[in-house]
Length: 195
Image 1 (cartoon, rainbow, N blue to C red):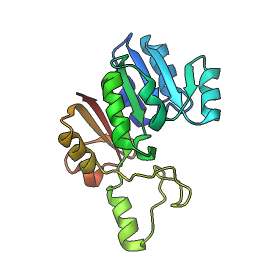
Image 2: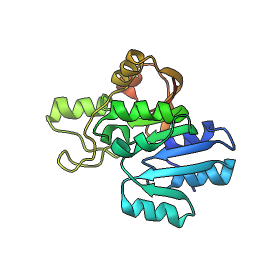
Image 3: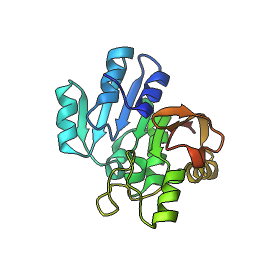
């Protein structure tokens, strides 16, 4: 099974045998890879019932829940890693979700689409419309994305909260790209964080 590019980066950087909570785990592809390749004890939280069923069919421990509400029930430091992949921008209170990630996990992975990518900017500038791209395939009225975050916005938020960046990876066209001008050139970002 081939993982989506951001998930592959995360999988490559999770220590074998770790305890992981994957928030917004989708169908469990990352959890299954971590379990099968690295002996990780992976748990998942997913809002979509169909995805929960698909993950459970893989033999994964996943519960249906909402990151905006249900993360408060998890004890402090209960996981080695808390993972939030392509979910931050869909949260009603992304700053609160981020605080919970860093409380629940010793480290946290966060990945998100970069809404400052040049194609997004160009679509707004030249077409005057919200972009529809392979990474952002929904139209403005049907998107789950309610907080359009950029790499620079996220970095500033981390600085303001004294969050330590342990690692950062940037993707364009599903391939790693340089951090130089990432806010303009990267379609997607992956951060490894800790308090």
